[in-house]
Image 1: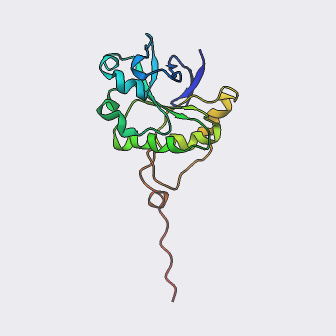
Image 2 (image 1 turned 180 degrees about the vertical axis):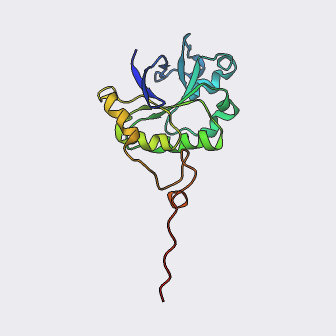
Image 3 (image 1 turned 120 degrees about the vertical axis):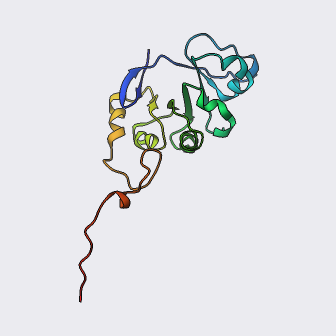
Length: 175
């Protein structure tokens, strides 16, 4: 079983990411038993059957939209977002919207081309699990979550900007 980073610890991954084979219609995909993360297109076409299972999560391609999942967002145990390349940042927006706008509280996992340098910023927008690239050290990637000790801007993980969190003495009046 491969390892992932989840809630700032390295753990075994007991989920399988189901990929669509080119030319196969989403409605004809057979979702095996066990913990499966299915493409959003498969979920949307088979939602009636899959919603009854507690061992099915959904993954988003970077060109899909958070609102496409609808009310099901709050019922899923896991949502993953695929990063096809480290330079494709659309997944950050999807993650933020799932957490802030649609109220997703389950495991939010980054999959695909996920590198250490991205982890700190990914957790800021709501990710709490990371399937890092297999050709990189997961131990080193874990350190990426603590690259910075504080943040300036607001985001999912910090609702107050730094200038509001730090008290400064009043400037002395000069005559």
